[in-house]
Length: 519
Image (tube, rainbow, N blue to C red; front, side):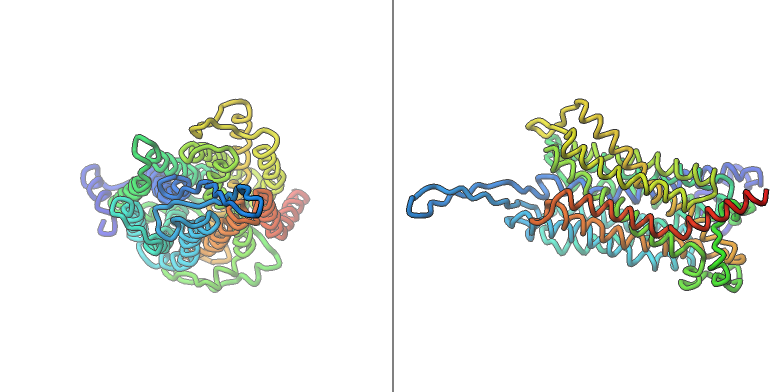
């Protein structure tokens, strides 16, 4: 009882001690609370992608400058784009410079910090109570998100304030993924893991949708375009979740006297005859965490990490720049662009569940990811062409979209792109990470999952940090950029993600052929 959270101790003192038959009850509770936790993490990341298009934060307008030059004394029209911004360094400068500052402050500072600290978070998570680990991460994430929004009402205009906040936020937010995946894997064994994790992974998209709704709600005339509140409310949300975790999170079944579930499944175990010998890690004691090199020796960790690097790059480019793409190509305002971009996240929910079901059915996670990536590449081209040429969205003078057939086609295509882009990303970061973290080559180590998860997601997060930066440089935000170059980069990244899994797919197919011959 001493190691249980105070809320659970209070419940048990009233209802009596847990019995073995209550495992399903506790699994359901853990599923819900970890789902809510990571939804809150993502909700608090979303405001910057929405607020960046708000006129009270950054407004770049065309200003015509009239110059009388030449002997003919004719009036020549020079058109330049300048910006008005809440942040001093982005105020009254050209659009390229302002948007470069915005990318460095809003995306690069956060994502680079997130990627770097992710590797440390995995090691730390293995070595401390995961309830404290996640509670502290949520509370600090909420606090610094709140401080970002507080700058609006307190009149803090220096870009360095926002950069420092973003760097700290990246470090605090890196606590989320290793923590929630480790807790989930502790409670859920091999049975239908792909489906369970696929449905559970909807927290990412639900969090994005909730964060978008919270952020966009205050970018209206009713709220005087108060972008500060767009950060404050998501910050309060994740802070409250952190308090709930402190009161109720049970990191593993053994803390409550329940038997941990079976973790291995021969059907979904990633086999690699060429590297299995190299992965012979000496059996550690149950309380000893695995090292970085030991985790890299697990068959499949390197391949899936590199695949996630490119898959997450594509996903995060959409996360941060899809509202801007919609705003740029349709003329929609910030609120409506953000709301429309939510359909990509709804597609991500379907994609994660679909990938999980296919993996449970086939036992071939690498092949499932590859199949979705093969279809995603041409679909990205189709989506870009649809939006720009075939059937673009139109909007009225207030930035409200005209809801005609083109609007419907864009929504349908956005959902399909979300399914195929986020499906592999969701599968690798959940079911695949859990499987690799409990690989049979570990010979009983109970403290490898957070490290493996941190390596895989940390590598992916490097791609996530680079993606929006490269995307901004290739988009019309840069003087030599275009949306064509932007989408070519996304398609190339999907192809590279596919190539990273070639060896895994080869072994999966060979194993499946061998199994059929032995029947």
